[in-house]
Amino acid sequence: MPRGKKQFKILPGMIDILPKDQVIWQKIEKVVTSIANFYEFDKISTPILESEELFIKGMGKESEIVEKEMYRFRTKDGERVVLRPDFTPSLIRVYIEKRMETMPKPVKLWTLGPLFRYRKPQANSYRQFHHFDFEIIGNESPALDALLIQLFSNILRQLSLSNYQLQVNSLGCEECQSNYKRQLKRFYKKRIKELCPDCRKNLEKNPLWLLRCKKEKCKRLRKNTPQIINSLCENCKKHFNQLVEFLEAMNIAYTLNPYLIRDLDYYSRTVFEFVSKTGKGERVVLIGGGRYDTLVKELGGKPTSAVGGAGMVEAIIEEIRKKKINIKIKSENFEEKPKIFLIQLGILAKKKLLPLVEEFKKAGIRVSLSIEKDKLKTQLRLAKKKNVKYSLILGQKEAIDNTIIVRNMDTGIQEIAPLKEIVKKMKKLLKV
Image (cartoon, rainbow, N blue to C red):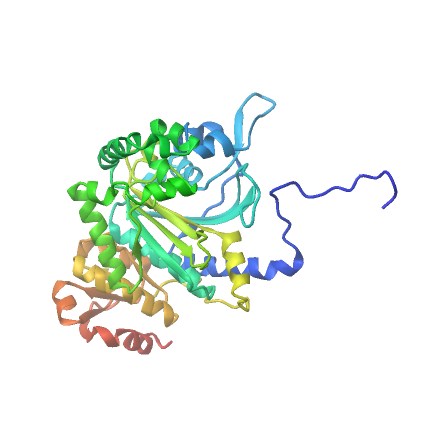
């Protein structure tokens, strides 16, 4: 380089994805796309620039991301805009603006792309980073929370990642959180001198934030705080109990973390994280999410329940590198339309149907279902809309007997088959 010429370098916290790194990025995109197709999520893309007010209302004016981490500026015509720091408010903005509430519920959307937060650059924590994001909007059933967790488990499995722990908790509804915050305030006010300066300030803003402080003295203090799980109302307790029952039915291992509080303030009820087991005391979150039943209303829509989550692409890539996993581009392809619709009637049937979804996926057979629905007629109507060849009906009696009804949607003829042999039978019927 000639003397006196300035050498330009990448900005702090940004990342170049070089040709040698592209294969791993392509693999993640292929896996996520394949899983999204299997679970019937529709892809959506939103602008990188959004209104500042969207995130102030969606994430809370006093939240750390809004106060300290958003890239914000004025356009030439004076409009206040930001580089999006999170996908969920953007997708909810689209849901409201494009009148998606008129679509059949739930609405299932996914996206993948860059996000931006101004923070201290460190390993796998960049100022421009990437998430893949899934949202289910329009129903409060815990079966959907379980389905989303199953979806994320499948993504990690297809990327050959297994050394992680799924942590779950419930934050309860607004009333539960209000009661719990009062308990936390009482607890921490008696120990105010033991808190770090940031936690002393946050105690009045939102005492929940103290549970995610990374300072050692605050982490020690947290072990003795009241647990929100003991403050849940009956409805929230029932919701959470059903969620863990679904996870157990699907053989998805989980750990109850009573102090799990996500770093975004719109969550209510279910929260979850897939955390890497580093063995060094580090806590690396690969995937995180939860339920947000008040956000749609907060952003100007009708009261609508929703659940979502996101995978941290850079953290997942680092995990793949650490484990020296050999990445190959080939992945399962579920672009064809489903040939089977799974129908369930009742909680017991739901518990048995969710693991069946995974069995069909392993067999390479695309299926469709509406796990949040409860009526036979409604589900049969959906099966006809999907134009599937067969519906499999699992009612209370069949769930107890470990059988399932196979219905030919063209002829209406039904037969009963053993549940444990249904995948094998359907492969034969579908000639796959």
